[in-house]
Amino acid sequence: MKGKLRTAGWSIVFLALSFLSLSWGTVEITPGEALVYTWQAVLGVESGSISSDVVQYLRLPHFVLAFAVGWGLALCGTVMQAVMRNPLADPYLLGISSGAGLGAVIAMALGADAYLGMHGVSMCAFLGAVGISLVILFVASAAGKGDSLTLLLVGFAMNALCFAALSFIIQAMADTHKTKSVQFWLMGNIMADSWTDIGILAGIIAAGSIFFMGQRRILDLMLIGDELSLSMGRNLAVYRKIYILVVAVLVGSIVYVAGMVGFIGLIIPHMVRMAAGSGHKSLIPLAGLAGGCFLAWADVLGRNLISGTELPIGIMAAVCGAPFFAWLLLGGKYGGRP
Image (cartoon, rainbow, N blue to C red; front, side, top):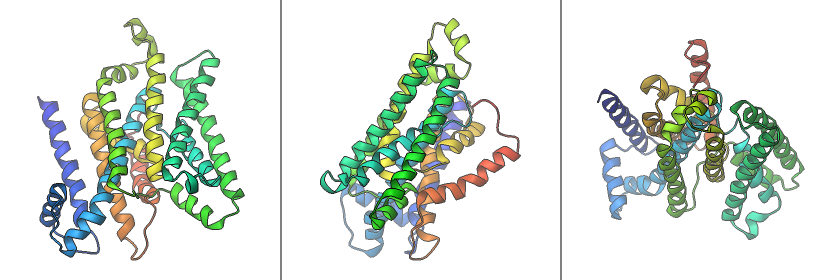
């Protein structure tokens, strides 16, 4: 009962903090007004006021998309830290995010966005993430091992290779305008063409969350190691491969929408673990809520810190996340196990 109350309490805190971000900006709107306008948007009612339009057409889409992306990245980080049994693990460590970015950049460099649209680029990002994941799993299997250390080392190598390829393609682009667009996108950018796009991403992340909640006991077992789990009749190598592929699907979808946003998958699971423990029954939903809250506020800060300029959300996430990560290290809160 105590654990459930703690989870519920933290959930309310993260949701309330997230929602407060709707009231902050150049147009002054109280939290109460933001709540009313949001409810009107859900019902499809338009009040016609400037404040209502600001919330319904500008802030609310940004908020929902940023929250979904933050939730997804925190979820992926939580899973990867259990899969790798390494507190530094997140989708970037294994090269999954850079694989998605590489797929999208190749599509843009070839002009696929012109004749296939951004949905074609999205598919290339998805294929890049899944493709790199399959390469990692194949190389690890060819080495005769599917354990976390082998996957980690192969992931390091693939991450370096993908970043090198990304840098080469960007430098080789003849179109200066497209080069700048790609660089800005890679730094992280919350932007969606329609509620349909937001709904698709939110649906994918929700499906991933439900899947991993159903796998929470296996994720808990991964924390104790392969040998002990084998003695209990569980072959974690099989589950590890499945989880990496599911994370690849999530990351491919996220990278297309938001570019490459770091630190969230790394620090949010640590933050939640310190507050609510390491059991994945509470860790998965709370990490998702905290990640959504973190990125929602990072998006707000990026759009309002400098008048007339929108800072890439990846930069804001790094600026906000790096000090916290340093505090984890210096404060001795950072252990050798997730």
